[in-house]
Image 1: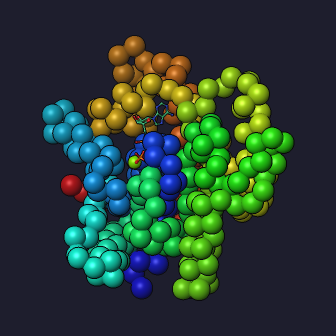
Image 2: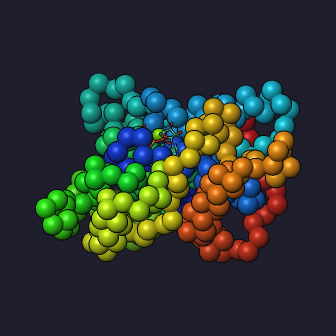
Length: 283
Ligand SMILES: Nc1ncnc2c1ncn2[C@@H]1O[C@H](COP(=O)(O)OP(=O)(O)OP(=O)(O)O)[C@@H](O)[C@H]1O
Ligand SMILES: [Mg+2]
């Protein structure tokens, strides 16, 4: 089937505000700038952060008449059907149509999911080739990955989100025998060497073995991410020769994004050193 040709990267975490949309947008633009063809799907159409981010980008392009690489984008609305059965059927049809459509014109499809559990989000997880979970440095975020005995900081077992990922891994395996490469990355890190920080590092290393994910270097807490969203730009769009050059924070943040892309290793996935130069510009 056509949709097997594109590599699907899902951004997921049942915790709201952990950085899924920001990371999804940066990954999409980074892959485009490497010369890959990228499609994006917003499954959080009600909030529509990724869709609004791209809208701001298109506004910027029109206003400044500047050519910026942008993905082919689709947003999938929640079904308004009356019965849950029909809702699920309709949502599944829309997602399949979007994947089929984008697979024809994309090397990578990026799917942004909402910060809550839903049929559509679970279904998307079952189609992930790579799953990226940004999490903040808090015990609330850890709690979604594993049950932790807070007295001794022992990991007791997987909790809701890890269980959901395990279920969707089984669904995918059953469907076509394929696996999901799960990457967890810390977002909004403060670089303070606090006790909390050390405990979270230790616990994450343990949970990664239990839940079978890889840990990627994360992003620091940087106001530049908020500024970029307002302009519809990403750190990958900044030019070295812009007025006054890049700030240290911008350079560091851009390197963090590049480190994440290295972890995804698009060249290994697409089995070619240099992607085709022909970039499909859309929208
Ligand atoms: N590394 C960072 N440093 C500072 N602010 C950040 C960082 N990452 C994300 N943010 C900000 O945090 C807020 C939430 O980020 P984002 O919308 O990407 O999260 P989300 O996981 O998609 O949220 P939701 O679950 O509501 O969809 C945004 O205002 C974003 O600009
Ligand atoms: Mg979001």
